[in-house]
Length: 295
Image (cartoon, rainbow, N blue to C red; front, side, top):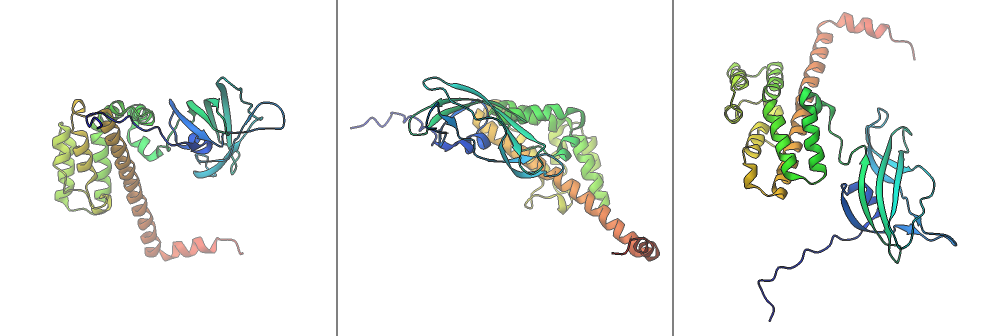
C-alpha cells in the first residue's frame, strides 16, 4: 500500500525544439532540447540554427518577422558545456539583431540541455511606446518591473508595477479626462474624474470613478481602473511569488490595453475633427485635390 501522504515530485518540462527555447524560454532557465545539432562526416557536432519568429522593432517591420542565424557555424564540444554567443538578424529589414548567450551540453540522439544566460534586446514582448510615455520620468521603474516579470520574479514585478501605477495616478486620470472631454462626456462624470485626480489616497480615488469612464475605455465591459485597484490593493505579504507573478502579468496587460484605448480614442477624435473640418469647408478640400498631380 502506497503512502498517500507522499508528495509526488514535479515532472520535468517536456523537451522542446531549439527554436522554441530561444523564442519562448526566459533567461536563467535550463531546458532539454531536441533537434539540437547535426553530425558532419568528420569533426565535432554543429549546432542547428533554425530560423526564429521574433518581434522586430524597426520602422520597416514593427511586428513579428523571421530572424535567421547570422554568423559562422557553431561547433559543440563533447563531454562538457559549450558556451556560445549567437546572433540572429531580421530577414525583412536586415537591420535589427537578436543576440543570445547560452550554454549547450550535448546528449545522444541529437538532444541536449540548453541554459540561457541572457539575450539582447531583453526577453519578452516589447512594451508599447505609448505606455512608456504615460509613465514619464518613472518609466525606468516600470521597465524594472518588466524585467522582474520576464525573469519570473513575481514579488519584484508586483511591487514595481504597484509603485509606478500609484505614483502616476494623476497622469492616468489626466489622460482619461482628456478623452472624456473630447468625447463629450456628461459634466458630472468629468467632475468625478477631476475630483479623483485631486484625491491623495490611491484606493479612494480609483474607487470613486468606477462608473465615470467613457464606454470606449472599458475593457470587455469592465472599468480598467477598477481592475487595477482590485489587483494592486492586495497585500504582497499575503501572496506567493507565483501569485504575484500572475497578478503582475495581468496588471501589465490591462495597462497596455488602457494605454492603447486612450491613444486610439484621441486619434479617432482627431481624425473625426479633420473630416468635419473638410466637409464644412469644401473649397479647401477641393483646392487640396486640385493640387494633386495627374496620375
